[in-house]
Image (cartoon, rainbow over all chains, first blue to last red):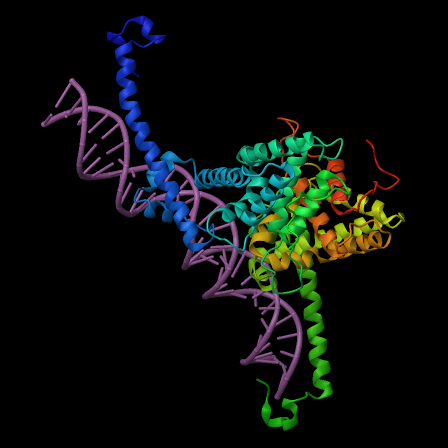
Length: 237
Length: 237
DNA sequence: CGGATGTCGAGAATGTTATTCTCGCACCGG
DNA sequence: CCGGTGCGAGAATAACATTCTCGACATCCG
């Protein structure tokens, strides 16, 4: 691509320093701009979703809102799907942060887990708290089917966090024998999220909806083994 | 609409018997035809799904395959969505039947539950056994978000079945105190299905995938009271 | 028989999106 | 000033779902 005529043959292997620097300079600027744009797209999408309380957004909407162009959009994302995936990962990271923050005051690992399950459950609830996170939990199921690998990556931080707790619980002898902490963490995490989701809007008909506490009791017994007792601060509400 | 002139006023309230019969006769024929057509659409869709192993079907495909017309399709279904819903309900009914059949030889309610969880788990697995049922389990998540009420209806037969088992388990003192059978049933059902789904294709990377037995142990501990032990026929595999 | 009415296949028309493509402008180093 | 390059505006394309129109064929009623 470059003017081979003026450059020594060695160039093929290693560019001269000045060129590298020059390229670097022009490259960095481009990178910064790119990052800015990506962020703008992300923010725009987030805002739209928050406004309409649903994932039904059009690439066009996002583009308009972010005051950029379709062209630019497809230059930065391979498609709508990647945008959503980015938001999804974001949301899960934030969620993990939130849980970490909410549990760091607590010493008892089982209580930490209880808090984690509560938060996870609430954040995954489709109805309530339609502000930010739940939407991505709406999105998760589709993803789970179409792009399981990406989902696993996105779940990683949360899974890691919960695994830590579970490991400490295991050390405290709170874990059913024969159950590896990571497995337990995975199951608890999934269960909390999905039980929450499966409640749907149905608050009207029968008393179906499963409560946070029920879900927690279920998870707790699930990993602690039958007969265990919920940590000291059990919410008997 | 009818010729009011020749008919007594009373007609407005109650049609004469002969007319009712006539209407009935012509109506029945129509109904039969309609049912036939619906079945044809359903079969065609099922076949296509089985063939491509995915839910990505086009209304057009279904229509072509069933040797009918678009017009006819929209005359019998309010839209693609309703078709999928019908298939979904079907699949869940079959699933419930299957489970019922597989458990009727078993007396111990806990063992019945174990079998049920195993079957549910396997049927919900996205990978394996891509023949019939799993596809609808793929479909479920979307539905759960968009039409929770319908999902509840579709789940009803399965839920009922599992609730029966759970009730018997409770009578046998196998259920954690304070846990109503129906709630337990709902949670176990959801957990079995979702844990299975969340495994994704990832069989390659880390050892993530949760096994049937792990899921069962988790569920069992989740609902069973203190000191309970998995039913006699525990598969220690 | 002959027209009215209803059913239905064939396929065109419409509407919504995502995604791609084409232009043309503005800016930048030489 | 010139050839590029980055990018906005928006037209073009492609899939689909859903609706609409037409015309053939049947069935019923007088």
